[in-house]
Image (cartoon, rainbow, N blue to C red; front, top):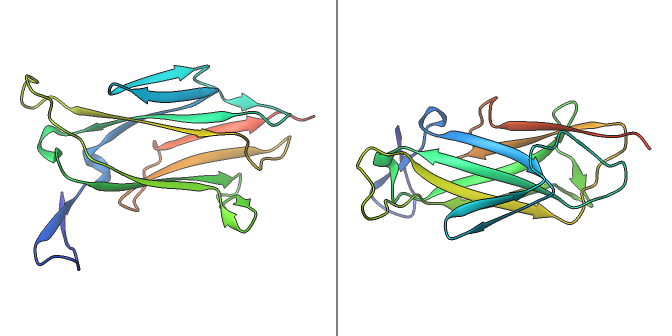
Length: 155
């Protein structure tokens, strides 16, 4: 766990280290979060297309108990086979947000805290016959296991 000075306050804020959180990440036809649960339709895809189709990233973050009630930044970006960001118009395909794990009443202390996230896309700027990687970053840091690779079938 690292402490970083936040220029907006005089107090240090705590940052999640990549080793502090585990991530389950799936490519799916669709996903949503409701009542703190992750609902996945057609999860576990590793090949799509070749025609454009809706896709979703389903994420379940597991945060240590002692890291509850601390806000963290996350982002997910689409990379090509060579690890370069995939452009959509002028900007790379990426989504950013914040998450904060809460400690539900009655949960035994020490229990990891789940944070479900669902990100849906109508279509993506991908090419048939190519492979891509979704890369998750938390506090601008990544881990090799925070990736999901997929291939777009040739037309």
